[in-house]
Length: 415
Ligand SMILES: NC(=O)c1ccc[n+]([C@@H]2O[C@H](COP(=O)([O-])OP(=O)(O)OC[C@H]3O[C@@H](n4cnc5c(N)ncnc54)[C@H](O)[C@@H]3O)[C@@H](O)[C@H]2O)c1
Image (cartoon, rainbow, N blue to C red; front, top):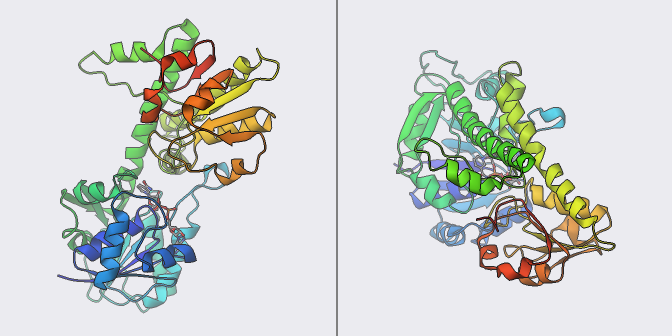
C-alpha cells in the first residue's frame, strides 16, 4: 500500500528514511528548516556524505516520489527526525521536536499518524500528545493504555539505531522497536515501516520504546567508560592497556571494549544524560560513566602537554580529528577539542586526518594549526598524539615514530 508521508528533518536519519520510503513506493515530502538541505535534495543529492545516499535520493526525485520543501505538507504519516541535544546542566533540549510538532499541528487530520524518530527522554511522546490535544481540541488524541477511539490520530515513538556510514543497510536490516501511545498506534506506525524494514519489528508502548533507545546508548557508554577507566588504571601500574585488554578478552565471557581519547558524536555522548536527568537518584552508574568518559580528553591533553614540556618550541602532530575511526564526523569530537586546546596554548600543531579535505571552521582561521599528510606530520614533529584509530594510520611505518614523544590514546602502536 502506498502512503503520503512527510518527514520532518532531512539529516543523517531523516533523509535516508525519506529516500528509502520513496524507494518502497510511498509519496514522500521531506521538510527541513535549512535551505541548503532542501535545495540539495531537490537537485537530487544529499547535503552530507552517506554511502549510496546520493544515488537513492537522485532516483527518488527523478521518479517523482521524493521532494523537499521548507514547510510541512498534509500527509497520512508524519515522521519527526530532528535533533535532540542537551542544554545547560545536561537538560534535554526538545525545542526542535516541539517546533516540528507545532508546524505539523494545523495539518493533522483524523486518522493521521505522527511518528517520533528523534531520541527523546522517557515520557516525551505522552507530552507531545498533551501538546497536540491542547492546541487541537477538535482532534481525538490517543491516551496511554486506553482503547482506540473512532476518528483518533495515532502517535508512536520509533527510535533509530543506525550508525552513520552504514545508514542505508542498517535502516533496512536492523530490528525496529515501535512504541505506540494507545491501542492500535504501534500497529499503525508499523504498517509504514513493514515495506522498508527487513529486520523484525517489535511492537510495544511508547515509554518502553523511549527507554529502550536510551538504554542502548547508555549501555555503550558504560562499557566504553569501563575500558577508559581500565586504561587509566593500567597507566598507574605501568601496564600496557591494549595488551592487558587483549589478554583479558581471551576469557570466554569477557569482551572489554577499546579505550580511546573520549566519547563523541551526538548519540552516546548525549543520550545517557536524558536518563540521568529523568531518574537522577537511580541512574548513578550511567552518570558516573558519563563523568568517566568526560574526564578522558583532559587526561590525554595533560599527557600531550607533559610530553611537549620537554621541548623549548615543541612541534606537535595530532593524528585524527573525527569522533570515531574512518569517518569525517566532528560532532562532539574529543580530538577536535584537544587540538583546539593545544592551539589555544599557542603551540604549533600539525593535524592529519585522511577523512577531511580541509580544517573545520574552528581551526581553519588559526595561524598555528595546519593540515598535512599523516607521514609528513609525524616526520616533522617532536610530539605525536594519536587521537583516532583511522585505518590508514595503521599503514604508517613504525620507524617514523622513533625518537618522538608519543601519546597513543587509541593503541595504534600497541602490541
Ligand atoms: N545520527 C545518528 O547516527 C542517529 C542515530 C540514532 C538516532 N539519532 C537521533 O535522530 C535524531 C536526528 O538526528 P540526525 O543525526 O538525523 O540529526 P542531523 O543534525 O543530522 O539532522 C537534523 C535535521 O533536522 C533539521 N531541523 C531542525 N529543526 C527542524 C524543524 N523544526 N523542522 C524541520 N527540520 C528541522 C536540521 O536542519 C537538520 O537538517 C536525533 O534525535 C538523534 O539523536 C541519530
